[in-house]
Length: 153
Image (cartoon, rainbow, N blue to C red; front, side, top):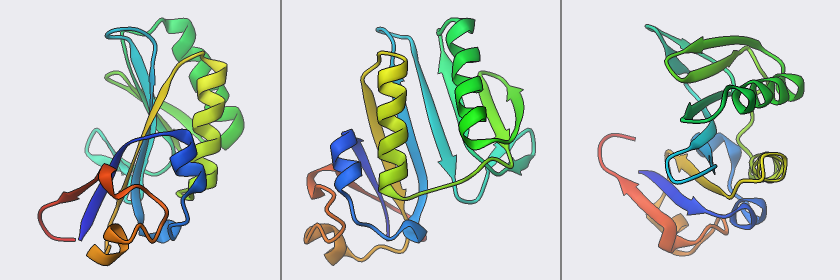
């Protein structure tokens, strides 16, 4: 089954012990104001860019200053590499370093929160999960924050 854990804190993710190969998506949302926010995310199978998937770390933004967007892009590119591509309020670091483990995601979320003085909210989606893994909190993620996703795994 597929499951999305949402509204996770940095500590939730840093303390998690899930197998990284089960993660197929993560998202770090940074809130800058009532409507202003940006996020950094990754999809295991690539993020759609025009009609082809791009593999690597990506980011999105809404009503955030150009200075913050440029700083974010520069920060991510210096940390993870990749070729910067832009399209409709999203940035793609094509070929950048990819990761899905809790320690790396939590560390990045903490760095973003401190660098941009923004509270963060994390989401991680998993595939091929057993109901027992969720109920018993086998991966040390709170079952109260788990949302099963209907459809094929």
